Image (cartoon, rainbow, N blue to C red; front, side, top):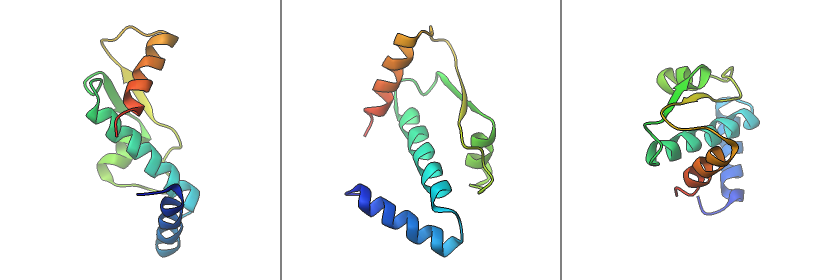
Length: 94
C-alpha cells in the first residue's frame, strides 16, 4: 500500500464485495499486521497468542471475531517501560 487512502478504498471495496462491515475488516487487517510484525521481531518467541484471534488466524477470519488480541508474554520481565520498549521495537518492523 502506498497510502492510507488506498488502504481505505481497498477495505471499502472488499467489504462491499464480501458483505462485511468495513470497520471489522479494517480492524482485522490491523491486528493481522501487528501479528506479522511480532512474528518478524526479536520478540516472536516471547509472545503466545490465544483466544479468538488465534482461532481466527488458524481457521480464517470470522466477522464475529473478538475485537482484541489476547497474548501472554513469556520469559521477559514486564514493566511499563519494557512493554513500551517491546512495542516500539515491534512497531518499527516494516
